[in-house]
Length: 491
Image (tube, rainbow, N blue to C red; front, side):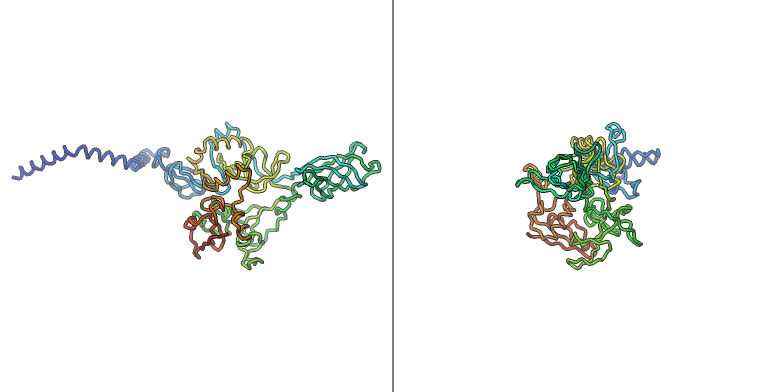
């Protein structure tokens, strides 16, 4: 009886196996396919454990990689720590696009071989005593007054009191007269031509009225606007003054005197040392024009304490910050300089520059002294980012910092019309809010231009006003201990 039951169960098992073997084979195949990444990771781990070889090329998965958010050039196929800052690497999908820091249009890294092959060379950004020189020919109208036409391009440099040099054929060879600019006036009602009046300090007798003179003026850029208004008198370093500050790498406008996290992406703030030519100043969070050297000073407009830190760089007397002309890529609507952030890694940074002088361009914003820029081969880097924009995105998370939404459409339409879009000016914001919004420029969440999506949303984060492009961005702002409030700015 037992043998009969055993034979019956054996026959049933064989029949069931014959019927289901194809189903089980297909199910097993699908299971292997579904768990292929895990099985590959286990196999690689086993090989590493048995052979001791670091097979980082295989990686955990062919679709994922690990990068350091603090050091974008560090990539690995395994979940390990960054060799630079010792932070755990973050997992992401290969080719996943990430937002770049504010002001950066592109990011790419090329091998040392390609750097040498392309002839890319870098040079530091520094200070030089640049001067603008213009020449004209004038007529002696009075004993000590010379009138000369001047080009409209040179009018901004003809500051009253600037010294000039006067030369004439009637003077002995090698001698010249000294003079100073008295005034510049429009020679016609349309303002197309201007006349320069120069006061001569001591005109000789051989120069009669109506004599022609060559006028040569060399005006230091540091003596005219906007360079003259730059901070120049470095205050002494007092006891207890902070020598470092904390900033978010992706939101450079978020500066704190102490540590913490960025409220927009929850990343830890980086500590950076102040240079010898830098100091921390404290401004009012609601009135950006008010700033003081000591924290806690009462704002004369709102009586609130000025405790929002900002970094102020003091320029040496008589000098301006310059960048080589060969390092600037001029697209017509913007100027870009490639800054070397790591060996072989370059960031395309938007800069604001003045007019060229002697092979250099004075820097108004976008660069800091000591940064190294690609002074040779910059056009090759620009061509690489345009011809192969996915190169940087595939490996280093380069994404569009300006966005591709309505702000890009508005900017493109305005550029085609030959106009500069004034998105904030059309919102009729209060003067204080307009000043803060113009200083912020972009939404910290979407990186779109403020005003591109209509009325702004004002959020108070840690007691500081921050503007967002739309209400959807409010949910992505990290709530602080005191909470945050938001209200629309309605025209």
